[in-house]
Length: 477
Image (tube, rainbow, N blue to C red; front, side, top):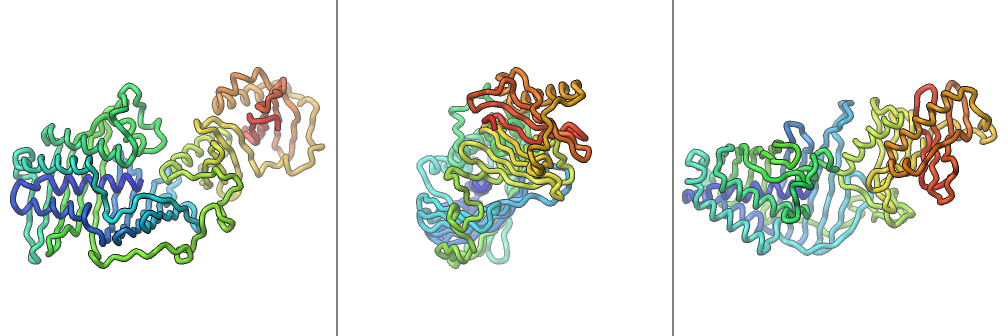
């Protein structure tokens, strides 16, 4: 999400300020001001907010604060994501704080308070870095800007003087912009997608595109399912201060996304950005004690794991996996209507989930392979593991029809959550049953029992309501 915001704001500043850069003498100053902010200013602060919607439904609100102090920088990104569980609970909060001291980078994630991660990158003293490709793109914008009065029309651009000698530039565009403008917009979009999201459209085929809902996040859906885009409308305002430097930008825009499988989808954004503290911004060297954090994986890290391969998802992936978990938990017999919470992380090439229902009604841990096939599940609040195993009944349950129905239902569940394992299981048989306070549990295992440590076993609550209590297809125990 951080990259998406940076990309959107850079496109707005580059295209917006350049839309009429050469159309008349006062307007070209805004182009120069935008270029100075993005590529030259090395001691400056910015703050802003942006809201993003797809087809009218908000999927992210972002608040950003960025400080550049030569080769030191500070980024604080707060993200708000609407919950999809229908409970009306407040937005999910996520985001990062990123401190860069030269080549050294320190990251604190909202999801994991009290710890930080480290890394390294190229030292950078400006908001954006220049490259041969970036220079070519900005030159393309400049060339188009020289024809702005012809391409966009005189009414699209308004310049207003102010008492302090600054200028306000307002750009109003609609979907009637010439094809040449949309072609340039697509070239710039593909450049941003490759630079910030590792998406190279020269290696993307339309026939391989899938519906947006098949992708893990909204951002991934936009990147992987969009063939081209066009401007629907834009209303942008840029403001220079008395010294002629860019001090604010605000507005909204709508883009038509021409997708491979979903037809036309509409991406909207409303935003503002303020610039301040020129030549007065300061970023201190990173001090863990100041932020109240310890290094991730260290002895004091509350999230540390004995496994060295544990990693965490970014906020968008986490949000979507959490929402997918709600559907899975419902499929497994756990009520999520009253709310639930937990965590998701990746470890040893497996995705691990841990969720609790409100009021400690249930507590479920499960894990899948990277493709999402279920490998194991354990309901930690079950009652049958609170008694001695000698209280289990290994004789036949008197109602054979109930056993047969439960067996078929368990195999159907296996087919839904791991169809590959289902193909290997011919039948399952009742191992034991347990009954207490109106709850009846059946324990089934693969028959015959596999000898390759990939056997299937499952414990289900049959009464009063069906629920998966324990599931395993990775070993015989």
